[in-house]
Length: 463
Image (cartoon, rainbow, N blue to C red; front, top):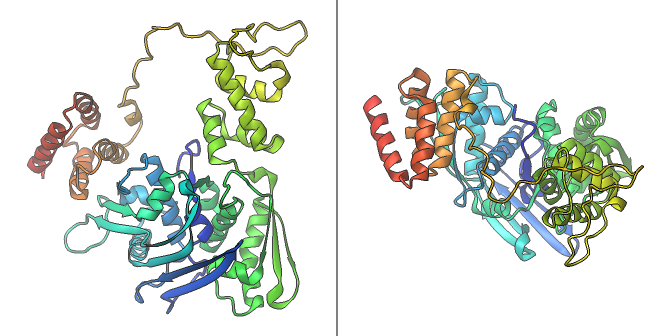
């Protein structure tokens, strides 16, 4: 399971369009096409897959979310390429590391690589405020290492893949939303996880993603199209949704689900639980910059509107820049205090230093204070890059080191190089801590190519 403290996000285009079918079985299905309206726009979405693989469904949702998450955590490389171990992807997707799941992962990657999508008028180019047509494969490039001629994943297998250009552009533009991956992976069935991910994306306004809704209403047949479920008979659609609805209600994500009307005119109304109030990515980022925990940020979001919170964060930052706020405990504590007691923090007069806000009249709630760092003070010592290896077993340390080298030297090592590197680190042919220190130092000395050449030579000699 991933570290819940890390920022976890999903692409809003992929999430709202839901390009993975919520069907449990898709035998014989190798295409689908849906048409729906959004305001004054008509959106057409189509999918065409290889007959032997079928349309993306089930665990392809878990794999796609894991790859998007890994791409985000890798620093959003401009070319969309990433390299990671198969064992890491299994962990990120919430799968076990046995042979059955390796086979399922291989099939899922093949489907996401070979299936073509076409979205007409429904793919958001958010920076330019335009709706575009996009045609792509979720994975545009797929390469991996394996033992012998079997073609099957093993413990050493490394993946090199490139995400679709429209998806990369969407993610790099910030057209994203928070995604509670830990909660999603804890849901019992792939269908429930897909519907959760879709519902969570539909809470965000497609043109103003900072706006979040607490209720969502949709036609039953339209919702079947969104979930990519067969929509011929309303009773069949209702039965397909019963299980996911029950689990999402029981787990507290949904507060209520109602169904009104008759036949194909039935409408669903979802009411979301306040405990699962999402936070806009921009607001969440501003909180995290000052060390505010996600749980506290969510609590504040339920108490104040996004515009009020953003205004008070900006006031906090202005006061800090003007030297009018001295933090006594932590920036997070100071910011929360300001948000809850804004009357104690007047806007500084232009051009005046004013009085330090730590000077309070008797009886006032004490404002936070802190010692400011004097100009020219020495910087904090750099973090020991090898500290992250402590406490890891040989296999985990090898995987971590190979991943770090791949991130530092993007596209300089092939999947085969990283496969060999990981193996030599595991068996003791190379020292991971020493290698990381060398990798960082030579990068800082502008000797990146020298490090790459030397390491390739060492790997060749050890092979």
